Image: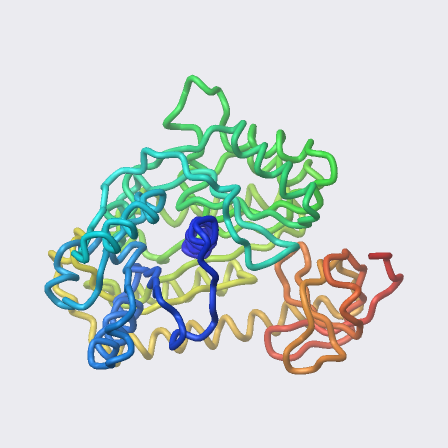
Length: 429
């Protein structure tokens, strides 16, 4: 979501005649598009901005802080970092040029941090990094209020985007040569629930997108287990464009911890949906998010999370140690799991995930996968890199003319998290 917001802001600034540069030393305007989901992300930004306050060259530039950290910290950013010029929240991206004009004319600091997303962005203005893969926002904000998460407070309640607007953007992307579209939302499964008059839920939207002529691939993230439906599972099975990968965060394997997190499902309910998904979509791969060391988590409860990871065998696992976030309900509980215990549990889960990945890669040897060729492999210019529909990274011999094409690749080996193969039959660019 932050990447897409950055692309939109770049597009808005280029429309007013500005040019993007890759060297901060020659820039007139510096934008820090921030994340607040973890404490480390915030500390990195504050550290960088703090160092810049002591640099004479940086003090001559216009500096703006945007994104979730802007909404979370608001005016306090000016107190801590008096050299920054403006603060722009996640729900105020459309005000970017207006705020910039205020700063240029008045020379004073400016702030816009609305709590709710109410203005439809000009998504078509986005200056996209890739020419073959694009992010498309379908719903912003979150109404689940997990106790550890700042998103409902930094991005507001869920606001669905009108389906006609989404379809129009997807059509334009396909017409421009894009091969893969990822539909974005803090909880895509809730799409349309806030607009019952539309009579368009997430699976309905997917059927409409699949009908767009030339649509090759569609992905989506993220899914909340509470809202995933049989209709969505059947759409993954039936729609040719929809990739067979679902990011399906479990967060913890203990019912007590899940309740404390306000996840609104039990382990048993989660496993039931995983079983249903795998029955309806044979071969589907899953991703997850997991937090270790949540307040009061015991070793036994951590072991339950370990067992879930071992049982389900996710293809992708984003595993983090809990960090307290200001403004979240979890802050009322003492962060009582020692840091060394958190790190030990984190490493144990990550090592397990590595073993699971190695097992899955071993099972894929000799199989053929459809791969969207994305770019040259940085480590070896003779190899191309892409992703299979199941989200596995794949490299194989080839040249730049293959970028943007779909190729059948037979897997013969793997290295770390990446499969290695050869093109079976070359498809034309």
